[in-house]
Image (cartoon, rainbow, N blue to C red; front, side, top):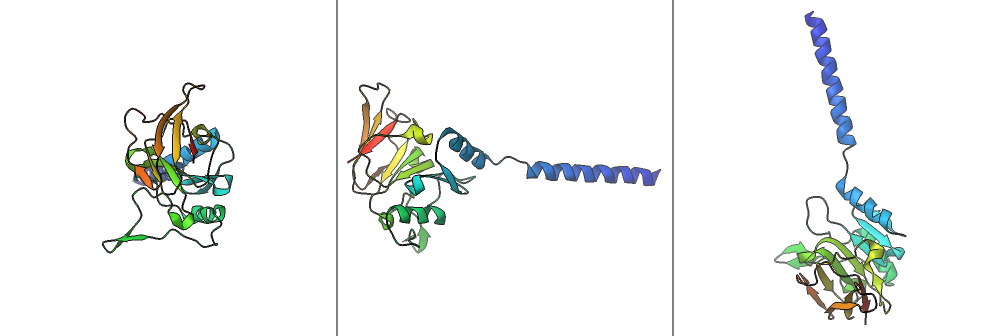
Length: 206
């Protein structure tokens, strides 16, 4: 009888361990789910890393915070290759680490610097450059709608690393859009303000 009970307990233990391992293997990945939701809502995007989506060959890149982080990391090697390509930089161009107090660190907002062309500008989902980061480099005289990237009514902070001026609008009244703010060259804002937070629909540049 004792042998039988031992066999039963052993079988239960094996089944429990198998079920636990299966559950762990099948556990959802919240970051991947978020990326897949964006891809499902947009067109032409491709996931290029664990936490990045690119459109138009890297002309537009969205980066997501890694699990447990509040800010999206600096561009990965895959993203930097695309950034170099769209700006005509040599293969192998990479974002340099900035040294502060003997410790290597990236700029707080992690928007690409002039190494990839002195015109990068980024929009952030949350204040203090948190949440998703959505970045461009090119001049856009015609409106660029954030809805194309599942980012409409999401901007709370921004960084303009280049020499362009960026004009951000809300088009709630289509025939009479409201200009929410202007981004001067080489400037940034860690919070757009309560009155215009999460209202941005599109932008144009100088």
